[in-house]
Image 1: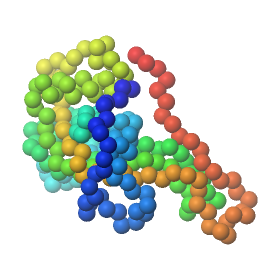
Image 2: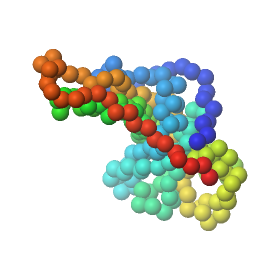
Image 3: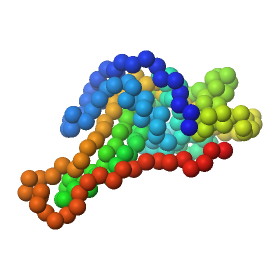
Image 4: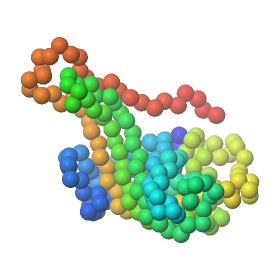
Length: 205
């Protein structure tokens, strides 16, 4: 997959919504760490309130362009994305790096990197911006893929909603390393350790 250019470094400002109540040592606000996760994760989940007032979660493919995350959905779906003005959303994306096997049930875990974004999303209506974002989405699946496939027809374009989500209120949570064991469990006759997990793309089209 192609990787979008990463803007210069820095940190996101910590806010009330991005301040954890537990496991604060797992949180970072490094912009580069957040972009790494967003660029590596194959999809994200967008949570928002639907037009009927009920909660919604949309799992969707995404692309980051600079300091903005773009996601797409259907204008005619029950998620109610079509025709909406800017509205608050939360976005999560996760990369699992390993399964952590401990000697106790309680300490089984995963090594992972996850991002949480809070923002007001805006619909992408400008034709030139929509074209550029759709091209970036397709090229994220494979470098130059947009040149090896047909552009969306007017009908297909009208069926597709695009949201722009500014990356301003963001936190990264991660776990790394071996399992944590209780002192009394060290001599138990059970295997422990970490099994690495990786997503592998086996072909290029």
